[in-house]
Image (cartoon, rainbow, N blue to C red; front, side):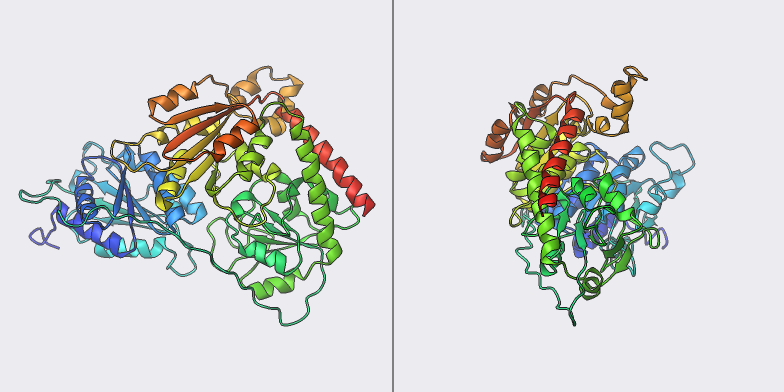
Length: 569
């Protein structure tokens, strides 16, 4: 393209925006900046005509995670626009999570023109290779070039249309020359108005194919990891198999679902009277070491349901045999005997009874009791932060009889960053009431996610903060034993507990967010049942000093209760 044929920056940006909209983008998150101004103006024009919804964030890291949340709840590609320089680098955590969780986030990074690179020009660096293998596709569009093909190809890759490639993030690096503002006489269109985009998939009936012959009877369990979907529940129910479902599987319901399953695995181990023979895995299991040990057990045959390519592991790097069809999976799993399923359900009921008994004896709230309460009262959408919060729900949350909430979690890389921004995006994308459960460290790590500019859409978002003045998860790992030994003095608490004294109520007030402090599960339940409009923080104060001992009591009570049931059986 000659200089005479070159597009103006505003012209190129308008073409890029049209290509985004033609490719199904309906939400765009914009971080302010000068070099990205052409995209900002073009997007403002598109929003004024009702073709797209913009979300403005001053922090690029939160912009990235907001886009991630929007893409999760709308199940459609979402773009995020930044200026050049370090602004692009701040998107890396969200891009990494989107990569490992196969979420179509489209990075539109503005750049200086080629003649400014290598000259020491301000905010100018190498941007195209910044995300490396974390993006499905990356392309550089020189200043003045036509961007339509590049954007269309990027969307093709982001939505999983490339052969043998799952959906995921992409990058279009658009270089812009001055002038970066619209021409004299340009103005926002007056027709149209703000479009309102809500995603509602509606109920979907699952019909499983019938096996061509009688299935063999086997001691198989169905393990539903993150993002397994309701097909895992339907499969377990159809074949009479115990269902061990993580909270974010969206399969933790139904008659075959077993509650505190991770503490039951040892009761069905190699030395037990009824050891597990096979495991059928749906989704990605990430929450507990007992489950990881089960999947690694040499005496157990394992298979994973994988009808489409996934982003979280490389072929041949795991023990599970990948199976593409439910018919083949049924042949592998077989059917469970009545005795096999009943033994799990009885053990699960006994374990739940033992766990509930321990928690009932606690005067104040604890991590497990908060997890159980949030799960019991979940509705609309539930977002579970990484670290202890999701594990508390996994341990203590009693399976529902039917699905009552859509559950989300950033389990791609299971980081604590960007949780508030992700939850905000999820709530805004769906327009539904959303509750997020997270610890105080996770909350503080993304406190900037509370910042919404004047005039920005405000979600109906309830933020439940389990505040134990630091990080408790490490006390439940081997670091807790190191601390108990005293060999490293206060170093474990300082390095892993990371104690703090942040006034969360004052922080909430600074951001204009409502706040309510509770200390018991009864108070928490009341707060969860209250009508929700806008954003509010429910702060649950707990003491983490006795958490390790509490988990030991829970394990002891469950072991005793389950032992009695299985012995009697």
